[in-house]
Image 1 (cartoon, one colour):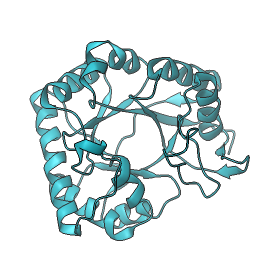
Image 2: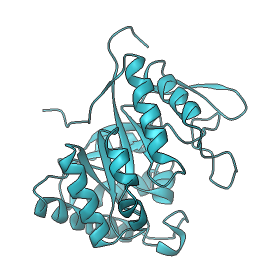
Image 3: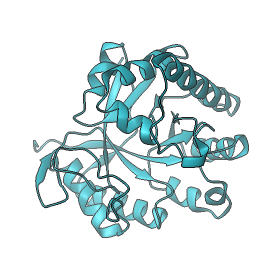
Image 4: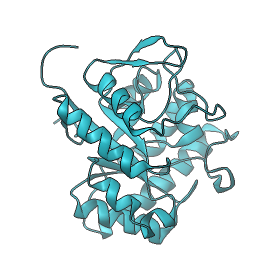
Length: 259
């Protein structure tokens, strides 16, 4: 990486679990992140939770995105479904439109779209699926930013569809040596230690690399860093990550579409 000042977005997946609104977890996280990805009701979330999340994010001045997933609440959108490209495009369009309408009702404007869970991971390696996601988002608004896994082919598919893209890395997930995320079937897939997550965030944002499972150093170029709102200790992790990034000279700022 160059010696130039590094700027990165710090995002969090939210609006999925009502308890995290009620117990103050989401409010605590919002003090540290710069953008939020709001569940759309298909994999998780309900309208009161979605609206409460959006209103809190707007009160904190955070950028808001939609977080559409496979319509599979029983498995939290983390199971691959066999849907046709048209079915994927349709459910993505419906979910993004739903959240965009709530954001507008709350006085804000949707900025980005980040697929969730199995849909996100599959699109990172399946161009047809990525194209279907882009087609669905385009039915709602073609000026949104599409978020995808850093280094994966989906970013090219989104760009070819005319979208601004944001390459994403993860502060609280372990990586494999090929730059993909370690499956949640492994017990060490999540980084729940705040110091470990903060160190990984700095390595990605400042140094452009992540230490994968097994010890390999993997280069990574990301414009946004993700934290999961449902990770145990998420508020503590968010605080540590934000503080460590700023201490390392990294500026935190939400993404914006190029003029």
